[in-house]
Image 1 (cartoon, rainbow, N blue to C red):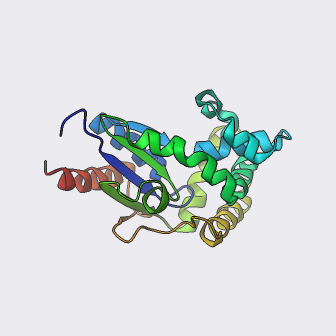
Image 2: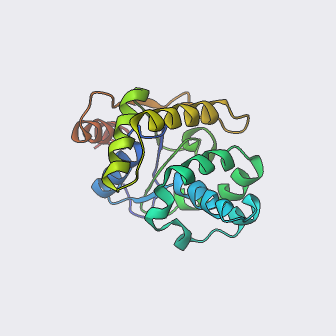
Amino acid sequence: MSTTQGFTVAIDGPAASGKGTISKAVAAHFGFAHLDTGLLYRAVGAKVLLGVDALDAARALVPDDLDGDALRTPDVAQEASKVAALPDVRAALVDFQRSFAARAGGAVLDGRDIGTVICPGAQVKLFVIADAVVRARRRFEELSGKGIDTSFEDVLADVQTRDERDMGRADAPLRPAADAVEIDTSSLSIEEAVAQTIAVIKAVMGT
């Protein structure tokens, strides 16, 4: 593949399915750029919690807004899920994502509507899933490791609430693209999940 040719990998899935970890590893393996599109909505959500209008926050978003552990708190995650259900906010962030996806040298984008809305023409589309209890356990361990005081029951409820909101929203609901390859990480190690994903991409690339 020419380094000047755009090659887009779209990876979607629910919270804590492993799509972010897989996306980073895959991008590093192939030398592609990586964008966690969920951070866009977390950044908007974080600004809303500070009193900023959601649409104004989306329109004024800059790359520096995507940095920092402050975007990884449960409150920001819930607010991100809420603002992601707003059509005007999603529309304001579409161009940012599509421009990133079209960059020369290849790009991996992970989120909830990459293969269905943002990059329906992506060369590779994957839908990463895992059992809700497994995902809640992962997120609980992640938050606990950062010193965030929460309970497994609260995290599970949070995961289930976000799933319902993401899958039930009218605009760009979370669902696999018709031609997406599904990867269930419930019983896979990180290495196994990454290896499966790399194999799918290599098959498409013909390498």
